[in-house]
Length: 325
Ligand SMILES: Nc1nc2c(c(=O)[nH]1)N[C@H]1C(S)=C(S)[C@@H](COP(=O)(O)O)O[C@H]1N2
Ligand SMILES: [Mo]
Image (cartoon, rainbow, N blue to C red):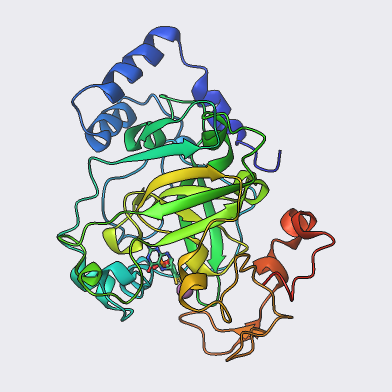
């Protein structure tokens, strides 16, 4: 197990049964997540370290509680909330980096659920509130500060995807996991045009999907995701290029065959299925050896697997990564 919970969080969990039930009642009731959590926090039921670790005063949206720092977080300086939320790729809202912030106001991220289907024993539906509320399920909610390939260091908040997938009991035929984004042309102006073949789709091999670094992400800077960053639920795969991290996910399917992926459909020569950050393999049109962080002038060397080689290199042992790019 690569990700541990902090000692403080453990302490906060040993609450008397009655308080625990009271907390559940709050969370399940008509009170919103934010108001329910604020009441509990105010009542002193949580240890300080188990509260959300918001570190940017400009961060907006509902605060996510019970967040634990991942031990795989980087120590690099975080990109500001403002930069993370105004410079985005989200073609559903347009192709310019500024479009998603400008054109996503009408998008409604709640209520939301994600369906799980395909090669599994227990297909079903997951309500977003079950992901955000850690007392509804066993999964822990983590903050993982990681470098988004090329440009930013982002403090994501989410649950590891693996244990969520396990609940639907993938069969031995489940070799891959296919993800699909929402299709809502009325709320997503970019979908009225055919920049790409909607909806956006992505995929992972099942062992990549199960890896503890792969996060089903619901927030950043301690608060729920803003629309332009993939509200209300998106993938974050820290050792792969950004486009693997599919936004506003509505469906997840276990498959026997490698699923189609949007950028590979659009341009197979430039974008493969694996898309691992790999400074040794040039993109057909540019070198991938160096990168520049937003807010910093000088470029730096890009690290193999985005700095997570110790954690993920074994997944690709024996594979020719120039062929499987
Ligand atoms: N549905 C959907 N998901 C998407 C995209 C998109 O256009 N549509 N763009 C991808 C690309 S190319 C990148 S770099 C990241 C950007 O995430 P960010 O805006 O939160 O930094 O989202 C990825 N996920
Ligand atoms: Mo991207």
